[in-house]
Image (cartoon, rainbow, N blue to C red; front, top):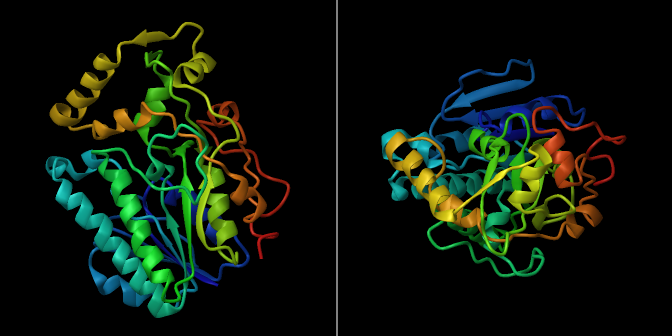
Length: 320
C-alpha cells in the first residue's frame, strides 16, 4: 500500500515515518509539511513542502491507499507574532481538514485522522467514544479538533472510510517540550479536588496508526493508559517533595510565557489540564487489537526520554 502523511515533519511524524518505512505492507510514503528542518531520507519516501491549505497537494495523494492526517496547529506560539490570531489557527486547521477529506475521497483512500481526547472536555465519569463532545470554553485547539471530526462524520455519510484516533496527552522523546518540562518541574498547581489525567506514549500512538492502516473499524477510538493520576501524583514519581503552588500563580506564569515571551501553549491549556479527563480504551483494545507498550502512567513516564519497549507482535498483524 501507499501512505500519504500530512504534518509529517511534526513531533509525532518523526516517529511515524520510520515506522511506516519499516512496515513490509507499505510500498511507499509521501510526506507533506509546511517546511522540513531535517528531512528523512529513504528510497521509498517522497517529501513535499507547502501550506496544508493549498489544495494543490491533494493531487499528489491521488495514488495513495491511506491518508494519515496530522497537520494541525497544536501550540499557537509556533505561529510567532501571529500566535494571538485565533482566526489564523482555525483557518489552518479547518482548511487542512477539508483538503484531507477531499484528497481521501478522490483517491478512494482510508483516512486516519489524529484527533484528541480533549474533545470530551472535563469528565466526571469515564468517557466512551459515543459520549457527547464538550471541549472546554476558550480552548481553541479542542474546539477545532471537534469541528474537524464533524467534517469527517459528514463525509462518512457519503462513503468515506475514516478512523478518528483520540489520544490523551502524548509523551515520549519527541513530545511537546512544555509537557515534558511541566512533568519534570518540582511543583504543581494545588487544585481541589486534584484532577485525574491519563497519558499515552508516542510509540503507542504510532502503533495505533499502523493498526489502523487495514482495519475495518471506523469512527472514533480512544488511546490512553489504563490508569489515571493527578499531576501531584505524577510529580511524586519524579520528586520526593514536589511543591504545591496556588493555581493563580501557575496560570499567571503560563499567560506571561505565552503573551510576553512568545513561548509555550495558549493559557487555555492550563484550564483544560485543570479538569479531570479519563477515557475508556476498551474499543481500541478489543476492536483495534491495540496492546500499548506503556499501559500505565508510570511506564509512560519511565520512557519519557526513550522509546517504549517493543511488543512481541508486529502492529497490524491481528487487525485485518
